[in-house]
Length: 111
Image (cartoon, rainbow, N blue to C red; front, side):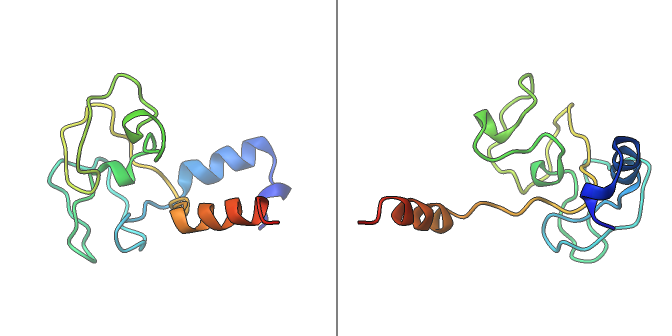
């Protein structure tokens, strides 16, 4: 189903019930009530309570986190004690690669 065809209510319900996925292997993980600090992906063995799996993680913003009260975490791929961690639902947004940005800039200013 195309996302643009969904009503606001349907879109909220979709994201509420979307599966959790691992930031490392990109596979869906079994639903758990809570993700503990030492929880690991059953498929690849990587930590699950990491910034990369958090709904507030956004590269490019201050400390790469949209939660302005959260403490700074240096290694975004390792387990941490952040009090604001909320597991993101659904697929992770694709990363913007610096090469892609450079190509777009070159295309923009090409003579």
